[in-house]
Amino acid sequence: MDFDFNRLISRENTSCVKYDLRQVIFGNPNVLPMWVADMDIPAPDFIIDALRQRLNHPVLGYTFRDNHYHNAITWWYKHLHGWDIDTAWIDFCPGVVSGLSHAIRAFTKPGDAVIIQPPVYRPFFTTVSANNRKLVLNPLIENNGQYTFNYDLLEKQVAQGARMLILSNPHNPIGKLWSKEELLKLGEICIRYNLIIVSDEIHSDLVFDGKKHFSIASLSEQLASITVTFASMSKTFNLAGLASGFVIIPNPTLKARFSAELEASGAGMGNIFGFEALKAAFTPQGEEWLSGLMQHLNSNWELLSEGLAKYGKVKVRKPDATYLVWADFRNTNLTDDQLNRLLVHEAGLGFSPGTEYGAEGKGFQRINIACPNQTIELALNRLAKIARYIE
Image (tube, rainbow, N blue to C red; front, side):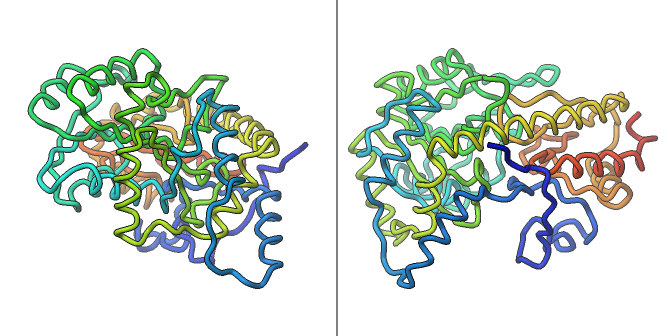
């Protein structure tokens, strides 16, 4: 089946964070927004049709997650990721960010140390701090654009009494899929010190070039017993506005603690449209659509990388996964303020400044390529306005 990923749709005047808040966020209402991680691509018709079908019934009352919902998740994970999940391991969460907050409250106490690995998704920082936990930074080691875990520092930090590690896999913003060997080495430290791993795997379906995503909980029974995995269909099918995710917790004791935290906070019900969307998404039809999406994203990557090749001071590597490109502007020798000002006010481009992901993001910009080809071409045309700074 053919899908049109180049269809241009205006998102303005829809209370759209990406477009309708450009003045607030960038101070320029006309930037081309390529920052926040949602797609300028419509959700697939078969999901929209499923939502319309449910709306044909005029009563939208309290709804539970039926067997179809849970079986859709287990089918998807077995079929796409090779992980056999028991439906008893699954619970609802409104989204990964709120899920992180619930996990922090369920498994740690105020003042406990929680480790994150910058450069990393900004809510990892804010969620830990907002819950009055001690934020411990375990920065990734970067070498010419390649990143690895800092195992030695991690072991020292864990030995000092940390209670939780929040893992990003695939890693946002760098787009890395952690290998089985890397995860096992990381996991061995966590097992030895009984450190709870909270793994954000929301981008795990969006994998390039036939590479494989490994959920750390799938690698051994010991790792499964200490891991809480968050995911959602929202990134894969552009459904973030439905605020619907799920969590996989094989350890029944941890699962009970998390479920109790959800109940205590009144956050465990979910919404009917999130349930219906997931049941339509995690299907063979959804897999076919995803395959087409990845081909489209690959063409966007090729457009972007070819367009940037003329600028010797900008380096990019193809992400293993995600639709996010981690662009290195460090060779421009511009300060972050100078770079941001040039991009926003001279080029009219709204990327995500690398410092949003920690001090380790200095000199970088995160670029969202989940859009029609035409948007990539427009971005490159706009970037040419500051060519003298980046050639």
